[in-house]
Amino acid sequence: MPFTLATWNINSVRLREGLVAKLMAEEAPDILCLQECKSPVDKIPLDQFRALGYNWIVARGQKGYNGVAILSKLPLADAGDRDYARLGHARHVAARLENGVVIHNCYVPAGGDIPDRAQNVKFGQKLDFLTDMRDAFHADRPGKSILVGDLNIAPREDDVWNHKALLKIVSHTPVEVEHLGQAQEAGNWVDVTRKDIPDGRLYSWWSYRAPDWNAADKGRRLDHIWATPDIANAAHGSRILRGVRGWEQPSDHAPVFATFDL
Image (cartoon, rainbow, N blue to C red; front, side):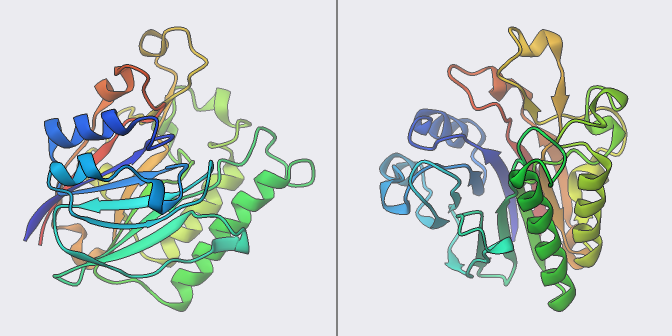
C-alpha cells in the first residue's frame, strides 16, 4: 500500500484553515500530520478537510497552544499518546494504519531563547522531553513505525544556514543535538529525509523576523520524518515545499514530504 505523508507545523489550524486546504488540494498527501494546531480537537475546522477526502482524524488539542493532529484519506485508528516529561501538553499522538504501520506525530518544545536550563525553564523542559522519548524507545523498541513532526532541532551542520553562528542558538546547540541523537539511536530511527537527500543545505523553517525570508535564507531544518529500519528502505521521494513558506499569511514552517511503498 503506497502512501505519501506530509508533516507541517501549521502555527494555528484555525487561522490557516485555507492554507491546509490549499496544500491538500494541490499536493494531496494521503496523510497530513500537523503540529502547533492551537485548538481543542472539537474546534478543528474539519468540514473543508473532509470535503477534500480527509475523513479520518486522530488528534490531541488544547486551547491556544501546542496541539497535534493526523488527518488522513486512509483509514486509521487512534493508537494513543504519551505525555513526555509530564508537561501536560498536547505534543504527541499516534495512529495505526490498516497495514499495521504506526505513525507518531510529535511536537518537541521549542526551548525558549537561552540554552541553559538553570536560567531557562523551557530549555530544561525540552531536554527532559527528549530524554523521556529516549527512555520510552529503550523500554519499548518501535517497529513498523514512522515518527514525524516539528522536533525543533536542526541536528546537522548543513541543516542550518551557518553552523558556527548557531552553535549557541537554541535549536542547534550541541546539548540539544546530543539529546535528539540519543532519542533517535534509542529507537533505531532512520532520518528518511537525509536518507533521500544526503548532501547539501536543507531547511524547513525561516524566521518571521527576517524582512525578506527568501532573500536572507537563514533557515533551519526543524521538521523531520523518521522511520524504523524495517520500513525505512520503503521510503523515497522526500522533499520540502519551500514555496509554501511564501504563501499569504504563512506558517514559518514549510511542509516536509515522503512516500512509503508498503
